[in-house]
Image (cartoon, rainbow, N blue to C red; front, side):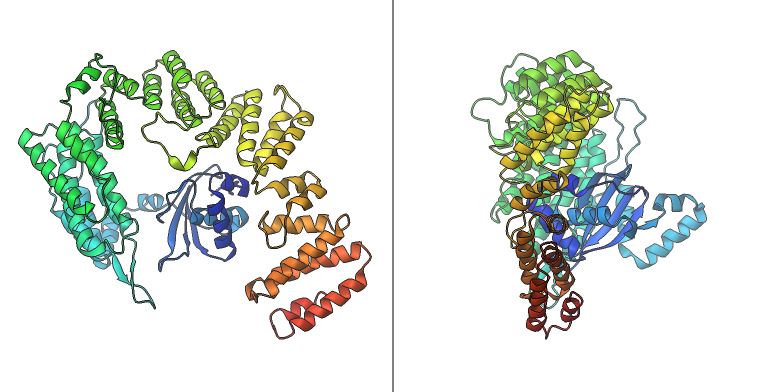
Length: 617
């Protein structure tokens, strides 16, 4: 595995301040363990609030992070604290990773007999593997041959294996929590989610009937099991109902069910909805119910798809359910290669990102650019279109749209699937993501002026050292249209005015602005910057701001010693070393001698701390 080049600043830009701070604490406490790399994938465990540790997977690309996932229920935007902890550990301790060969490479070396023997030995000790094999074979579909014609299985899926698997997973989901008189989940949400995903190949092949068979069997057992056994303890399993409902809606819209079968399934789904509504799950199944009831027969929808209608949804039906259902309809139209109907529906429904994306995929680049610049309101919409254009090989158009997106300030009110975590009432939707993407893309493509513009926007969004240095790089680049001497004061002024900037002290320190760094560090009890930065500052300011260093460093040490935080006594000694430097730099060695003797006497009964203090005499 290449040495990771991910930095703390980059991690912070991809997580909320709260997640980053908590992730730092987890990493410092040693909660990260079992880091193993297999090819481009790194896996690790992070101890948290549950009995079992959380599992994190990171996919690397050229030493950087392509994506990262965690099995915790976090869903509030950016990386969760467990992913942050693992990435920080990778960045700070790259040699702590155990490297192993990818499993696929190991298996590729085995002949058929050895593979069968290996599989049989696993079957002897893992009773769930046989069920998994049953499911894999039951849901096998024909492989695509590269043509636009979908291929699916013609025989109905046997759903008995699905029903049995749901019962097993629900029944084994909860056990008594160690040392406490309550119940705690054992983590089978992931297995249930993977089971639901077994319907995806059928959806991708346009086989709505078999997708519905799989989803109906799973959901029937899941609803019964959830109501009978898990609703009191469930923290995240109920989220599956939302995914299932969307998939049922999609399968229903692509299938050719007879009217009686459609009505019967609609009654079944309505029953699930009513039963779950009594326990607070009210938003999941209405989209499936409406899809089954309306299908494609709505006269207003038929008018839109035939280019005769000018608005969607009809008056009185503009609600969240219809918006979600419209998104499902677009997926079905795209999968069936009904491109013109897709364009008509997306346009009148206000799904501008989807509309421009389809224009680009159809090769209508000029139309996509014109429509996008006129209709897109948020940076996130511009980024989505720019990525589609780039994939189509239209680099100039992609850069043009992305650069225009830097000036957008909306929160994507027209999108069908809006990610609330990245949009607020005061910040443009997805601006930092667009700025980072465009900066790297334009820079690699030989557009230093655009790269600098994006870097400046990125810094204004994150105020991170990484973005500060990126702006410096492109300001100094030939052809950027500016100079670092002009850009630097602007960045520093923006940094000073920012209400929150985790890297504020670090940037001042890196730029040699010791006075500004000291002023930004706050009080010893504050968390204006990380420990490493503050210790560097204390050392750099020992001569010029000795009084501050003494007060700050002694205050930091006191917070540890007075609160008996034994695991951090070495850190307290390090802070006191900084105070000693400041006393020495200001010619007050006697004051230091008096202070250290006082501390030794005060903490003489702390056998772990006292030797550390005595070493500072």
